[in-house]
Image: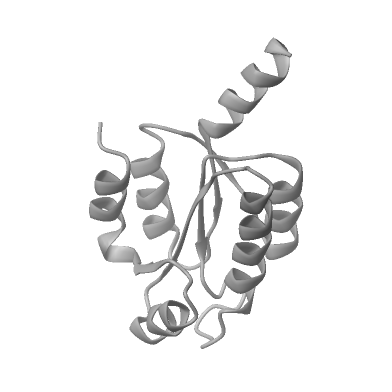
Length: 132
């Protein structure tokens, strides 16, 4: 039993990132989080979903339209967020934030009750969510 508890605590100290776009912006977002979490990155939505199913990360960050850069489409985030909400019902508490450089994409996500912010304010958001 102690081994499972240790595994769960370790997992909660990990963050999962699914980002596309400017590598410098992605690197900056990861740098903010890596001060408090071990960060793992995925290359596509399928990998994100697979990791969400197998590991219980403490924090999830993804482009709202992950894999469809410049598209006004939040279905990637809807799919991942729904999976995490279903797992929360099963007792697994996790934090999720969708990000985008597009105001329209963020507004669409917020209208659908998906936590979402613009990439430029991510550092401020993270500091408020996880104060040191």
